[in-house]
Length: 318
Image 1 (cartoon, helix red, strand yellow):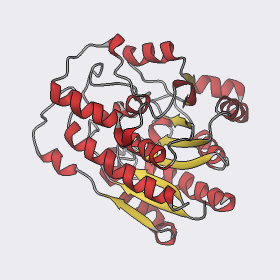
Image 2: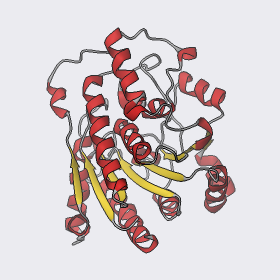
Image 3: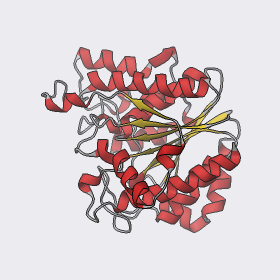
Image 4: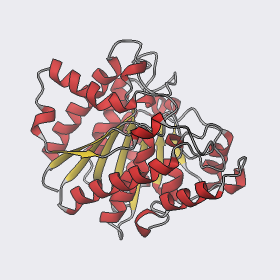
C-alpha cells in the first residue's frame, strides 16, 4: 500500500438516536482547533448516504430503514474496494456502525481470495439479525451480515418477505457469503449484549476479551494473543467504535454509551498496535455523536487524538 485515503461516511439511518452523521464534522472541529492539517493532508472520498429516509415513516420495524441500508452498504463497499484496488489504505470515518458491514464487503470485493480477520473494538457485539433484534436498529447487525447468519436458533421475530430479501442482499453483497469466519472475529471490550448474541457467540466460539481480562492480562499480552489467534488470516480489518470506551471517563457522546469500558489510553493502545500490524488493510472509526455529548465535544476530542496518532503510525508503516 502506498497512500492513506480517508473515506467519510455520514450515514446514520441505522442508529436508534440521531446525530452520528455529525461525527466526522465534530472531528473536523477538533482538527481546526488544534490547527491540524489532517483533513487537508489526505485525499478524501465522500460516501453518498440515504439519510433522507429519516424524514419518512419506518416501513419495517424488525429492520428499520433496511431499504436504505442496503444502498449504503453498496456505496461504502464500492469506495473501499476502489481505494484498495489502487493499492492505497482506506481509513473510514463513519456515522453509525451498521455500514461497517459494507466496509467488510468492500475489502472482500477487492481481496476475494484472502482470509479476512476482524478486530471489533466495541461495547456491543452487533450480531443481531432481523429475526432476533429487540429494537430493529440495524447498527446492531453488521457482523451478522459478514458472517452470513440469520441466527434462526434464537429467532424471536418473523420479518416480512421484503425484509428477508433486503437482508439476503446485505449478506450476499458482491457475491461472497460468508465474508468472514467465526474463528477470525475477535471482540475487545464487548459488554452490552442480548441473549441471541450471547448464544451465537457461544455456539460459534467467538472470542471476547473483556475489559476485566484486558486489565488482568495486560494490554500487550492481549495484543499478542489476538495476533496469534488471527495468524492464519491474510489481512485484518480494525473497527473502532468509540462506545468501547467508558462513557463516564470520556463522555456520553455516542449513540449507545456504556459504563465500565476501556480508558482512552487502553483504546489508543489497541487501535495503534493493530493498525501498525502489517496484516492490517483498513481501519474504521465510528459512532461519534456530538448531539449526545454531555461534555461539549469531548468524545470527538478523545477520538481525534487516537486518530491523529494512528495516522502517524500508518504513515511510518506504509
